[in-house]
Length: 221
Image 1 (cartoon, helix red, strand yellow):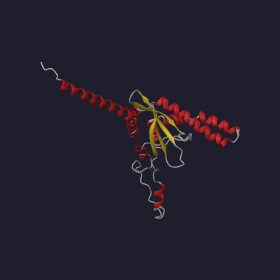
Image 2: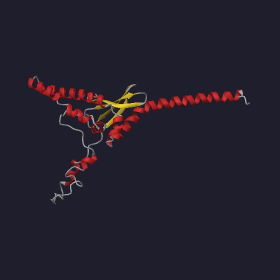
Image 3: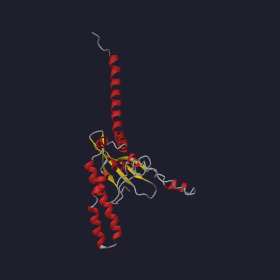
Image 4: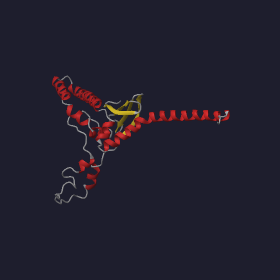
């Protein structure tokens, strides 16, 4: 029967220590990167309107409560700034806050999550809704392939064509920054440019390595 020599035992122990250190570093590295990975998967799923995958990365009840609180505060501050002591404005503010339900419900959906992660948050307009997915927008009536009736040929002035193309240009993507706000909270901040209002989408830890979108901050100064 072979008996391990002291030389072999001296070789095995450092190897075990190295392996343990590698495992610990790998676990810590994955733990640190886990919200970034969750955010990437969530955005891809939201852009694809993959409702099942989106639901795995969104805490809808918490997000709905956060949207309600944030939109109510945004609307109240906006109306108070315009009130100037007018009692009717205060009544209008209360009515407006009571009518935010449809706006909140519209943003607590895969379409709303996609809007939040692409720089299009609610801005306090009660009629605002998340934009439709690109495939639905392109198939809307009167948008080319979906409309089989040919439009009458109307010659357009050559001088106005470049201006029309310029005004139809899509908006620039927002500037984003991401980072931890605490051991269990991770925020992605969006801003379209200098002077534009910033807002943040907030992910919270679920378990050890899982994260879910659970809140928004519409006044992320």
